[in-house]
Length: 440
Image (cartoon, rainbow, N blue to C red; front, side, top):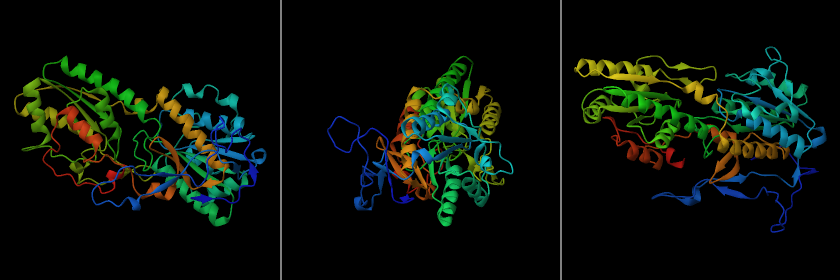
């Protein structure tokens, strides 16, 4: 865990380090949280990772009266982003007494003076109602900026703590910024708050927005079910977000309980032929006369293997449209065998990610932001706020970047999906287990 240096200032928080005195307590740097609470055959528990527990420190690195903090939101929209911004502003200003908080506009490009919109000055009054709206009051964008230019800006603006709210690309950018500040000897803390409704960030048991996404997706799936049952040979096909991880598709399937087939990136499938998906769907239609299919946007990309890989501005793979592909193949397949279907295709992705956070996510966002504020004021850097076994922890960003969290084809979540849908474990193709997936 990287620290900027000696903590010379007492925390202004009204806490205690005496256990049992009825007052909330400070957290020691020596308190650790085990990454795994369960080991399997052949695993040595001594090889387990331990994380530093997050929370307020008794002594802090920055003098709150002289501290300037900045907040930037990057990547796609996600329910709860405004809640995190609001909780950071309130925590820094009301609890620590930080007087200057800047809102960086439109992602990392707001840290490049050549293209940046002027930053906002954030105070409690300016964020009073933002948690009731979706999106981000600061705006967002994808892609990085030249690291040297970004650090030049941070130094010139005398920013002491940069809070980066975002996913995988944001963490890569934040790590590069932290490396450059450390190389220069600049005392600037870089702290991330993990944001992705895909829920695919390593060592984060859940990321904010995921619960809200499941709630919204369930309503869509239930609507698709009604559409399917209301037509002769009806099929409801719903495409949900999840480029490389199927957590939303799997979670929404279990939340709805109306899904007959769930397709995710981690489990490749054969489309045609014996044991393939279309054969299984045909049997379902013969038996029940309707079906509901949920497909993650990154599923079935092996079916496009001859086409070039597309990437977004952050360098992440951009999946081919499996939803439209499946729609066309399903309709043509049943027409060819003389059993035409009525298929309703629904893609609610951008609606789901732009709604306000539900109550559970709002609660979670507030806790994430508070722990990020504590970490920043304590001088932690190159760190993100993780969540293990209902405990918030400090996770070094390089560790996050080593691999993404995935749905394990051998794990409990996917097993529950198979039990709920009744679908085959595979559709004609073997699944190669990711050796790291079981960790998550």
